Amino acid sequence: MGFENFGTVSFTAEAKVADFITYLEQGKVMATRCPKCGVSYFPPKADCPSCLSGEVEWFEVKGKGKLATYTIVNYGPSGFEDDAPYILALGEFEGGIQILARLSKDIAPNDIKAGMSLVVSSVKRPDGRIAYEFKKG
Ligand SMILES: [Zn+2]
Image (cartoon, rainbow, N blue to C red):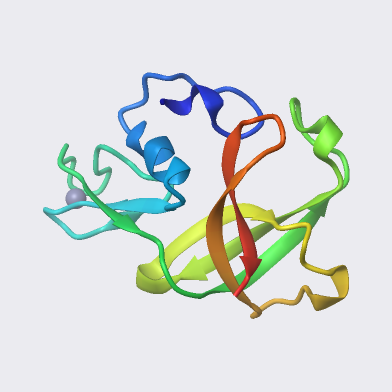
């Protein structure tokens, strides 16, 4: 499967990093690393903007990250109107990986604070689409 079933709004299926979705379906949130210069990317990039190499190494974003910051989205952008309100968060993971994702609705609003421990995991939406989100770490 390609990107056509990712998230709420469709992406093109022909992305060079379509393996990302295959990994998500296996329950793995993956990032890429450039084998030439060692820079890591999330979302994954097939080409390295740093050294322009077209080589890529996949690795799983594992372990606990930290909530850097978050915002409550009360009015969603196009395609996300029906999901609001939801919380969009920035998590920092090992190796300097930064991930922008929703916070799971399982996390009680009173528990949300900067610095809290997070894990990132794939999530199958009720409509069959797949995405990733943060859960309590
Ligand atoms: Zn590079």
